[in-house]
Structures are given as C-alpha cells and as structure tokens.
Length: 125
Image 1: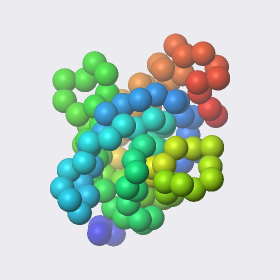
Image 2: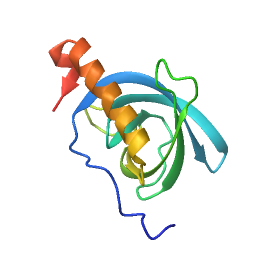
Image 3: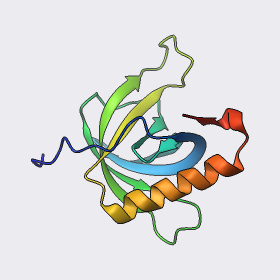
Image 4: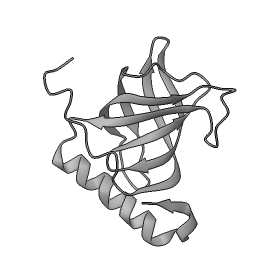
C-alpha cells in the first residue's frame, strides 16, 4: 500500500458501544455489516467472516445525521472468529489509517456526543 500506511490513529482513544452500518470491500465485493464499537481511532465490525489481520480495507461508515457516508481507509488489527471463546462477538477490529483532519474531527465529535448521551456502562475509556 502507501508509504504512509503506518500512520494509524490512536487505538486507545475513547470509544463508545453503538451500532452503525458499515460497508467494506472484501474478496467478494462490498459487504455490509454493523460496526458495534467506535472510536476516533477505529471500529469493531460484527461479522462471521472476518478478514485476516493486516488486511487493508476501504470503509464506508454512515454517521447519523450525515448526508453521505464517510469514506475511510483501515487495517484489520484483530479478529475474533466464530466459535472462539470470547466475551466479544465474532468480527474484526479495524484501525483507521491516513484519516484527514475533517473526518477525524467529525468522528471524534460524534463519539464524544454519544459518550455524553449514553449511560456510563455503554462507554469505555
């Protein structure tokens, strides 16, 4: 990929449990699933067919209130295959890569607004 591929946003950023529709490119074309955990640095996608770790993906994330989906690049950083003993549902964690300031700001503002509106047990630091 690009030489700036290692410029991911901070994966330790505050996150929120919230379902968002997300589309991403896989071998079979674009797949639509649900992101269930979002931060300024990435998201977790529920899927029974997670992509391998280190796979680069193009994401289309639909933020509530936005007129168009946000297009982002990401890299799969962790997977949880179906049937794996875990407290987390099957899926994959994707870290955002090369996010411009406008998109980073929009995602960060959305996450912070949700963190303030949701009960404390729905958010994680």
